[in-house]
Each structure stands twice: as C-alpha cells, then as structure tokens.
Image 1 (tube, rainbow, N blue to C red):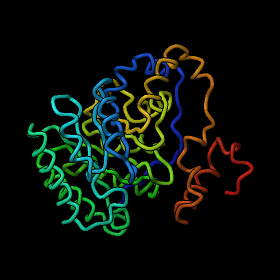
Image 2 (image 1 turned 90 degrees about the horizontal axis):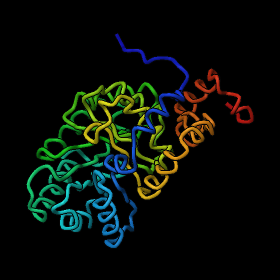
Image 3 (image 1 turned 60 degrees about the vertical axis):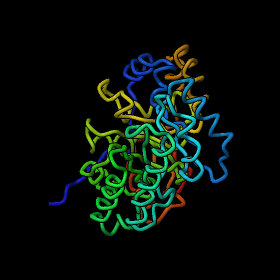
Length: 316
C-alpha cells in the first residue's frame, strides 16, 4: 500500500519560547561551525576563493564550497593544515549527466584534491545534484546514481541535492526516503539557483524522513542570523541534532550571518516579536513560474491554509 503523506498547513510554526531558547543557545562562534561558505557562480575567481578560505579559517566554518573546476586546484593548498573541509559540487546545477560520468566527476575531484593536499581521506565533501527528471519517472535510478557517486567518492562524505523547489510534497517525501536508504551522509534541499531556496517546511520534511542519524543541509537565500535560526528550528530542533555532522547551512553571506547573530542575541525578543509574513517562508508561495502540477498543488494548499488572508489579492 502506498504511503500517504500528512495533510496539514504547509508552514512550520515557530513557538516563541522554543525559538528564544534556540537563539540564546548559540553564539556567532558556534553558528560559524555549521556554515559551508559558498560561491558557485560561473565567474568566481581565485581572489574570491582566497577570501572565502580566510573567512572559513578565521571563524571556524565547516567548509568552503565551490565548483571543482579551478577550485580543486586552489582550495587544497589554501585549506591545508586547517580543520576546514573542501566542498565541491558535482554535476551542478542541473544534475543531468549520465551516472558513469557523474561518478567519474566525483572520483576525479577526489583524486585531484588528495594529490595536491596530501592529507588522505576526510578532508573533502561532495555536494551532488540528482537528475530530478529521471527521479520523477524512475526513482530506482536516483538510488543508483547516488550510490555510484558515494562509491566513487572513496569514503569522502556526499551530500545529495534534491532540488526540492521542483518537487511536489509527495515527491519530496519519496526522494528523502531514497536518500535515507543510500550511502550518502546528507540530504540538501537546493542548489541556490532554483526557483526558491531554503524553506522551513521542506527542511522539516527532509529531517522527518531521514531521521536523526543523517545530515540535513539547508541552502538558498540564507543570509542572516534569523533565517539561519529558522532553518535550525525546522531541521535540527533537538540539541542532539545541533552538530555540524548532522546539520549545515550553505551560504554566500557568512559575514552577514555572523554579524547579525550579535544583534539577534542582543535583542532576541524584539526580533521574534517582529514576526514574519507566513507566505514569505512557505514554499507554496513561490511556484507561479514552475510546472503546472506544482502550481496546482500549491493552490490546493493555499486555499485551505489558515494564513490565506495574506494571499487575498492573488489568484489561486
């Protein structure tokens, strides 16, 4: 019998008391340890990678995440001797190459980095993008491609980018189950170049499915401390999950996140009381330009949502 997904308001609701407790359990230094400092633009230059490496080493970030072309020739030397990991994206951002080519991309990147850094295993992470189109018609293919990349990674940790903005809620549950059954170490929502990025609802679903023993990475539009805390609330609400081995934030704005964390700690209650328009953190508000089945699902959710007053001037 096919497993049914829960029917509920498509929004993570934030308890004021729990959010306050979460925020006050962090410092800028602690928050830094969860950050994958990221720049995946096509024109990223070595000067920017030097800055990213300096930020990551200075603040104690988890990794520096770049495209492997050029990046794998630069990062190993920049990060050698530090605890900061190299992170490279594989088949980014579309995930559309064949399994064999995707696996060879992973193997080549690992070989190249190890050859330059000379430190052996445990210094590299790979963020691979699944072929979303193939997943929709053949979920077994997705498990095969994930495990092929994991095998090619030769023990290095693999994070699986599922491009959640292109999935229905049912598909997000299904792909999360597939990732949970694979040899990967993390599931990740977005490339940061999708229709929208990290939404608490999607992060919560992924954590719900993969459970407490697999990592969850939130990425896309995370540029300040409060957004970071909402992601923690959704994907790592318990203290046991609040470790870089089980939760990460991908961001191109690490300095803004860390500086705004000071303000958030200084005026925690004011930030919480300021609130947020629910639709701005709900994935169903951002599907207007996506495929028709995603728009139709969103409209069904919005019509039944207790916050639908916010959309009274929109057609749905």
